[in-house]
Amino acid sequence: MGHDESSQNWTALAERIKVWGRELGFDAVGIAGTDLRHGAERLQAWLAKGMHGEMDYMASHGSKRSRPAELVPGTRSIITARMNYLPEAADARRVLADRLRAYLSRYALGRDYHKVLRNRLQKLAARIEADVGPLGYRVFTDSAPVLEAELAAASGLGWRGKHTLILNREAGSFFFLGEIYTSLPLPPDQPADNHCGTCRSCLDVCPTGAIVAEGQVDARRCISYLTIELKGSIPEDLRPLIGNRVYGCDDCQLFCPWNRFARRTPEPDFAVRHGLDDRSLVELFAWSEEDFRARMAGSAIYRIGYERWLRNLAVGLGNAPTLPEVIRALQARRDHPSALVREHVAWALRRHGAGGD
Image (cartoon, rainbow, N blue to C red; front, side, top):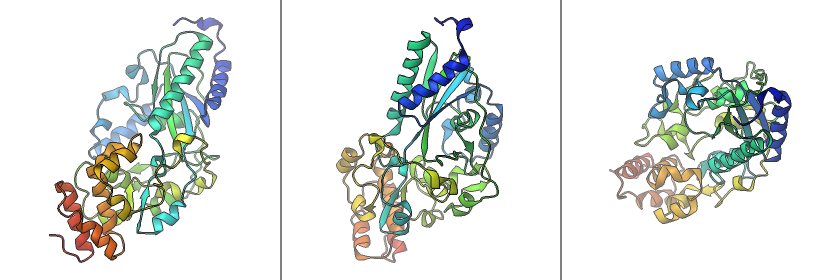
């Protein structure tokens, strides 16, 4: 290990780590233990119902998700961190209400968050090493088999809302999470109390009814899954319900009362790029593959690729008002080389009574 455990005041170190985390731009830092049995049971029940859809990675890795010391040998505590991401942007509800605009999830309007969080977590780990000497650790952010929300809840960063996301009384839910698995025996924080009460806003507002019960999301109906994770054709019965949401969905957050307290991020990397908070569907659908690659480089959106980008926009255009520019945009892509794109364009044209077969 390289440091003298007997002489360490672990509680004082934990407090220092939280201060260093805030200095690095995190909005809160917590400490979790390694017992995640409850989370493992929830995950297994969810997987058994097939609610993960095509996300096979959720079912892989065996017990490593719920046993941190199996994933990273020597893990004795887990440092968790959250960072607000809500940028200064066009009013989300206004964009959603305008069926000619494209709605993109707020987290994806800036640069890809993975690098930002991972770099900050690495800096925090380096700061700890400078204080205590070499330690075993590994950094994660939305990666590898980590029960991220369970860890955040266990460490007091917030509670799991009925939509399964982490909620915090001071900050709502518009934040990213990251973790450092460490060999340090840091004392765990107290989990946060649940403050959802009888509120059902997220369940009632979900456009596709994907929140099938409190704390249970059927990914196969979730717009975030359909527009980001699903590789093939979007089920036809769900397409009209997607509206103009072309990359992810924030409805369960936008209509959550706790997000009255959501904080804007000062982080430049999360600032809106290329006006993506308020662009028309027709405009984005006209992008060439070169446009997409150039403008989405460094963005989380880049990973879905151009073909799925057009698929999603075709659905949005199918749900848009029947206007000449909408029909023209779709007709320009009706002979696209991709069968996936052609199928969704044909569906959209039929929605407007413009043929497409």
